Image 1 (cartoon, rainbow, N blue to C red):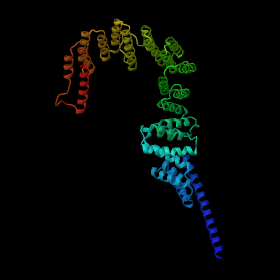
Image 2 (cartoon, rainbow, N blue to C red; image 1 turned 30 degrees about the vertical axis):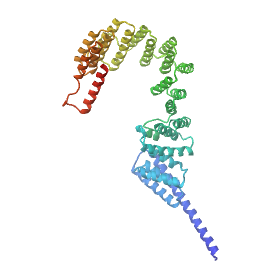
Image 3 (cartoon, one colour; image 1 turned 180 degrees about the horizontal axis):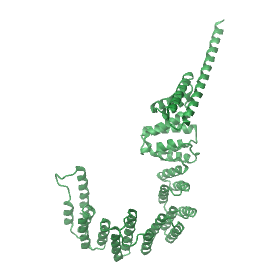
Image 4 (cartoon, helix red, strand yellow; image 1 turned 180 degrees about the vertical axis):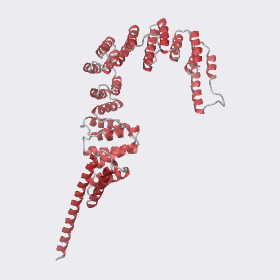
Length: 479
């Protein structure tokens, strides 16, 4: 046999052996994937699952040894290391990187690395580690390069861009999220972001937030409106919509859009409230009032909370238009609907809070209308409903007397309240300000200086310093 014939025979033998090893490697890969499918179908960890996991790992390792070009073997090993006990994140990252060295376009490796870096970044806590966030973004960009409509990747890109202040890039990613197909498994996204869902409504809402940050309120309004159409009773989306409307100001276009929203959902509170607010700001008060009254009549009788919210906006609309008597009348309707009548002291904390807020508004309206007697009568009514041990009542009375120029009565009321509520510094400050109003600034300063800490006084240095700082600020304001 000639040397040429011998060389050809050896190359033929090596080629056959190489093909045989690749075939054996692929067979081991298929065996490992079959075992991995069994593990994925298992609902809980068990000794049997652990044994299957070890067999799968062995099969994938053998596959990689037989054919070092099988990137999928390393990707599978990375998945097992990350998701199946005993979990080893560092090993998972090592295997994923090995897979990418073989094949830069290995989707599973890029996806796994994006999840690992995303979890380790601390995004769920609010401010992610910048280095890990950038690594996450790099891997996510590879994922969407390979699969342009990968929902989780676009959503995570949007969240990381927002966290890093890269608003324009966030807007692009969030827009792509919103147009991507529904996600099959949102578990990782929820874990990385701290509980966000991968739903379309969340995509629209997050896009609205990003557009508000970019000072693009009209586009933000459209995005948030889309989110609200998918979840009409979300308080979070309602608040976002309110922010967008505030940023837009008043014009016919936004009023017409709000009117359209209100017509679609006549009983909905948010659109009607925002529409009324915009109409009122545009000087169309009667239209605003008509809108709110129609919304109130459309609400079911059982929805006391919704009716109350609308009535409170209606009362404020009357007050802003200087129609004080009508505003008071609406507030009284709310108290009646909530059963806050008579003179019995309220025990329910929610009703106490509502009564306090409404009665303070009524007092303010009577003061604005110059009706001192009604203001004083409302203070006494507040005392009967809340009890004499509530310092808010005394504060209202003192401020009313002070506003009326009845300084001696206000001063005496402040001193009495300070004795009854020694822990309430507000009464001390009120007494000092009333003294100053009366031209007795030295007496006022002496009153406050007596509260400054003394050398050797008990208590921590920080709390003493803060208390003195507050007192010095008050003394400065007196001067």
